[in-house]
Length: 371
Image (cartoon, rainbow, N blue to C red):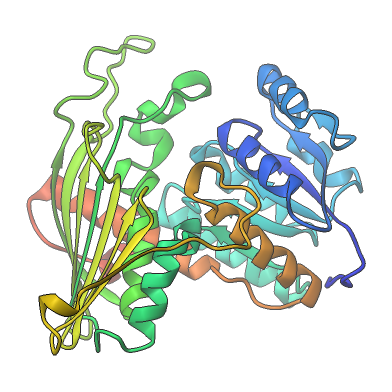
């Protein structure tokens, strides 16, 4: 279902909340992209999408995503609905031949991820070669992409230690407050941190083996009540991941740390040196052991291709450039379903480790039909 360079790719957005609007605004700036339809059961979300579209597209609104899929108005679908809806929506999307980008996390459980992969395999078996892409766009943040390029280019040697810190604000308010409960999100270490587990895997180019975590809900949302329930989402955690080749990675998450200079800090150390990236300053630091501290180099990294910065430092825009290129060329996705499932499995493993106080094998989670 590849398209030619001259073709306009028509996009439909399923789920027009905050991330749906983010995709809409990004697609406004992508050459050859046109948003032609949205679907959302929440009328205020649909109305906000039309309002913020500012007449740039002639967007048709649907309450039910199945009507959008059957409309013939779109070539590609963006699924940016609440996490717990992904499985059912993806079942319907994968019954079509439409191109697909699904926002992270792929699903809230590993079992649902496996079912989605099986449906995608069945679609491929019937001859459909449309692109299926998982929206783990942190790979595309310009300073992170520079860090990845340095690491994969051999600057530090084989990565030995990876450290990722996110110190930030609490979860935002979402429609119906769905993101306040683990049953809807998959848990904080799935909902928020699948991005970071994917980065760990991408940095090391290795398979995660074991996860050990400690975390809790200590500060946020404890004074909130929804239908008689207090939110149960974690707001801080440490997670250690061990890799098959011997590398180790650690995540330091705190969601009541607004008073921080950097929201995200990434560090990769190998036998030859160290590469770091910082956000939102977009600074990248490179140090080689042979040169010591006097040789430490620092650079603020941007990508001149970014036409819209958005919420994530231009990463969603760059992701969309690659997505539309893949659609036109009929090429493989930059982030596939298996990468999406593995990032979810690591989050599930981390939650299990917190609950049990023991290390959890990733393969045990992947093999568990109840995970």
